[in-house]
Length: 393
Ligand SMILES: *Cc1c(COP(=O)(O)O)cnc(C)c1O
Image (tube, rainbow, N blue to C red; front, top):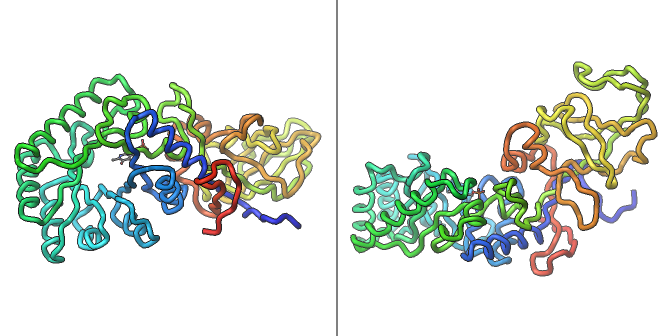
């Protein structure tokens, strides 16, 4: 093979110019700066590369769940404002303070642990308070709010912390007109007013996830926390794609092509039997790489702009597609698109959302679940959208 760029057998190609484009879409719709959420290794796209691309495209800051994720970004040279918001009693807050990570606390106990770590280091911790205004997940519980507010004010006046932000997360962001959205915002506004009365007003307030950023600019406050939209998926598919471009395209190289006689069963348990003589292709990708086994017999791939159905069980390492009696013009070594963005003017390729709809989940789970032998590679330049340049990192 003489191609200049040899793609891995399974390639998860991430277009950083799509990331840049999507950051712009979110910021414009929300009318507010973007905190790009790069938790879970950037929803499976690579937190460091996506983080850099998002910042270069104008995102103001980054956010992750675990502090370990934030520390990994710091180790990779990302020095932008960075918040982590999901901690346990064993979280190493001292490491977070030393790395300048904004620590979002969800209880008086977490705040006390941050204050103790700051005192031990002789430094001031940057803190966000995450308020449970109705999601019922992490965030300060209603009955602990008064205590938390008083402790925050005391810690700030004592120099242990700088209260940088107050945040909450919506339960029904993907239902723009749900009454709880406005109620959650009002509860956060009240919490901020409480803090102001105690002399500890936060510098910034944020509420919106991607769905709210795109549909409820009135909830934006000082910035919006956007994850899925940055990766190019509509958080509310029924309202369209908002002009977002999926950043990841998952492809696999055709490993083997073979003739199959009528009546031959395909893959474990012969879930599919060839109704006539046909030609099938084996793709070297399976559920261990993030293709859900539940998709067996319920998906298509795109090869050179033509669609071919997956047949038989999706296995751990391989799956089979039916090329039809004429073989569809496909050759071993061709690339099959499993899902991705459709290039301008080309026939539509399957999307992660198609997969999610088929098996009853959401595209978040599909893209963040690409793993195993899929190798990520990066194309696109955030400075000059649309260019193709493979990055080595
Ligand atoms: C994951 C997460 C987000 C991003 O949500 P999207 O729907 O992907 O935009 C925002 N805020 C918090 C607290 C999160 O955990």
